[in-house]
Each structure stands twice: as C-alpha cells, then as structure tokens.
Length: 152
Image 1: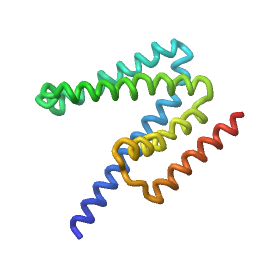
Image 2 (image 1 turned 180 degrees about the horizontal axis):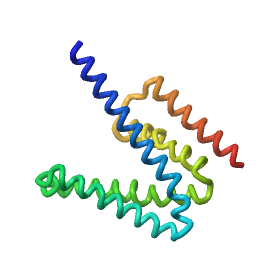
Image 3 (image 1 turned 90 degrees about the horizontal axis):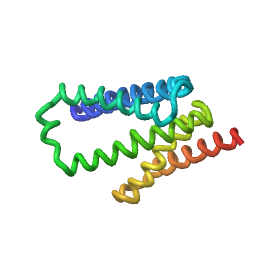
C-alpha cells in the first residue's frame, strides 16, 4: 500500500501545480486586456515573453547552473521550437483573441488545447485512446462549439 499512497501524494501535488497554472493563466488573461489598451499587441507580447524569460531564467540559474550550462544542442533546438510555438505565437494569437472576443470567450476556446494535444499524441506517439479520453475530447469540442454559437 505504500506505493499507492506515494502515487496518490504525487497525483495531489500534480493537481495542485496544475491548479496553480490555471490560476496563473486565467489571471493573466484578465490582466492582459487592460494592459493591451496602452500598447500594441506585438510589443505587449514581447514584454510578456521577456518578463517570463527573465523570471524563469533566474529560477533555472539558481536551481542548477551546471545543468543549464550542459544543455545539449538538440535539447536547445527542441525548446527553441517550443518557445516559438507556445510563448511567442501562442501568446500573440491568444492576446489577439482576447482583444477580439473578450476573456470569457477566448480563454475557453484556448482551453481546446487538450483536444489538440490528445490528437497529436495519438498521431505522433501512437498513444492509446481510452473511452474516457474520447469522451473528454468530445466534451471539449462541444464546449467550444457552444461558445462559438453564443457569439454568433
């Protein structure tokens, strides 16, 4: 039973971190709207990415400098691509969606991220599709459709 308790503790910690991430993303979606009324979208995105880079750079340097200096070129290339897709493009398009639709509509649509991730995981990594995963994907699609119908 010790293994079960450790797994449950690990799951609870993971849920806690995920909820903190949701709090951070949700708060930033609300805060970006007034911020973008003062500057252009590309400049706002740049400043947001720069602030993130400085913050996480300091954490990475304080946590494990030797690992930071030993990052392979392959890992650096992969994370550069991830940074471009997620931080730069994702944030730029998300902020534009917030400007056009408002936070209440744009945030749930961006919440379709699990749908994209699940489909790509199945296609790229051949991950198995369970009934619960399929049901969750369908729920996400229905939710996005409902949001889009309300707008129209």
